[in-house]
Image (cartoon, rainbow, N blue to C red; front, side, top):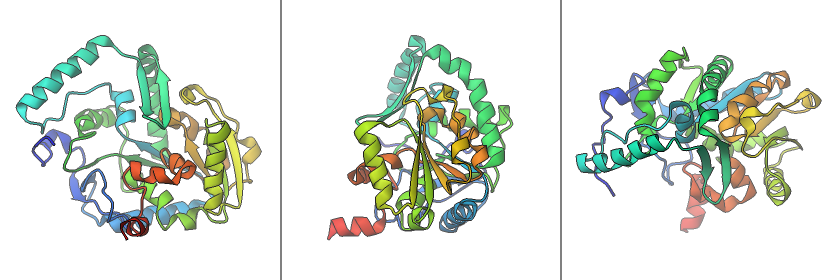
Length: 314
């Protein structure tokens, strides 16, 4: 473990407040960050419940896109960034040399979780060309729905090195975060894997937008069936190129209560096309892996709720 300065430097503080980051029903298993950036001092548990209440209220009633952004999305829109400024000087210097090497190589973009799924595969040129359009899509989604940004931080540096560039990027593209359109990244995982998932999923008509095929698709469908969904519809997209996909949601209008999207880096493109459904459209990401294989809940923070942890510890 590398020692580092726990406090964020001023350039990382891209929102005015840092608050204790506690999610209801997820206090026994770790989360990546015991603090999160916020627009005001507020109770994170109440904030989470307000988010879930808002999703439930929108089910079957109106369009509410929820788009997550973490290190993969940050890397795509911002490019690689210098190592975390909180690292010891020698460690920082070594990682900075690696960072410079990556910059000079102009590597193609590959986003994936080892052993699980690809989030996208694009050439370096495609990445650069897509960045402006990506920003336009994120701004549109921020105006129509919710951005779940990974602005939490804790004992080990992870995605915080992107914070200064992210702050500049938001300002440059006039993407304004508000109390209505910003939530912490992990609220989405907690809503879909914690106890309140029953309120969202049980008895609902659900549309899945995902590139999985064959056995993987069957596993996801079985997982959602276990969660008690009333009807399950599937809209296929490409596995690694969803940033360029065009989807037709017309057949599902008035047929679903909410939609779950697994589109990797291409998620803003897919979410922006789902307006006609007039339902919540949630970028579920890794939760699809949990639905496919429940044991995957231990491989990401905030996917294993307290009651499950207690069973394992007994």
